[in-house]
Amino acid sequence: MNNRSIGLALTGVILAGGMSAGVWAEYETLVEMGYPAPKEGELVHVPPTMEDLEEADLHPELKQVIRRGYDLFTNTQQLRGVNVFNDMNCSSCHLGEGRQPFSGPVWPAAVTLPDFRGKNQHVNNLEERIAGCFAYSMNGTPPIYGSDDMVALSAYHQWLATGVPMYPGQPIYGRGFPRLDEPEQAPDYARGEQIYQEQCAVCHSEDGSGLYQAGEYVFPAPWGDGSNNWGAGISRTFTMAGFVKHNMPLGQPMSLSDQEAWDVALYITSQERPQDPRYTGDVRETRERFADTFHKHTQYGTEREHDGALLGNHGNTGEKGEIRPWNVGLPRFEYLED
Image (cartoon, rainbow, N blue to C red; front, side, top):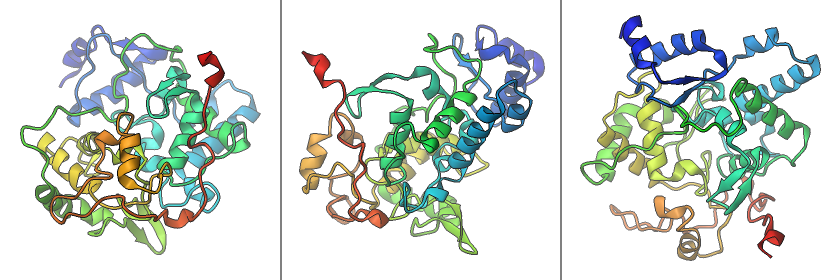
């Protein structure tokens, strides 16, 4: 796509923060990689970088806090044993330091929250949304609201949203892990296993345990004790399929067909991982209790077709042991119901 055609494609697209030059360069790169072009009326935003932070007209103390948030986001393992009990960093799922379109960029949360969230059936603010990632994706327990680490993470999210209006009235380009159309064939475990071994195992290991070099974590575990627990959003098959299609194999996004992405997603989400912290002691009961708000899209509490294993039928909480995330099941705004 040449510059003239890129300019024509951007007609009708809303550029956030007046960052048209940055949008132009990064958008061109995305299209060349095979990502879809923005649709008319979509909001396109290129988040600032940490290099931009050095030049920003912000108080030095605020810059320090934003840097701390960036450090926590890209190396969340420094909270291992306190808030994190698996091998994940925030940036394991939110690639490109949380900036990358189609990889769950985190800045939209800073401009669309507070908002109602179906998963816990009440209005969530930014800190509560981050806390949910600790409870499920990190298989941990979050920093306390208002704590130094939580303020730093929130400040980093908000810095990335620089120039974007609150509650934008337009769809956001590249938000989340875009959901794929339903596949032509039902997702297949055996096909997914073959794709995983051919395309994914080199980075994530044949047994899904991730990759370590000299004892250092390099690539995350897609299942097992080092991975997210059964309550994490990416344990939903459609979410995993969207992530895989738009981001994997690393450096080759959009290279798998939609069918291949669905197949490998089913394979990955049909593997065991630590227990959902909302577990009632009975996996079928837990699935039923949270079916409408979450588990109707996971394999949790279902029998795996190829071997009959009842997925999630265990008390294994991974490295976390008996620790329960304090934010799970915390009711909010009940008094307003009167």
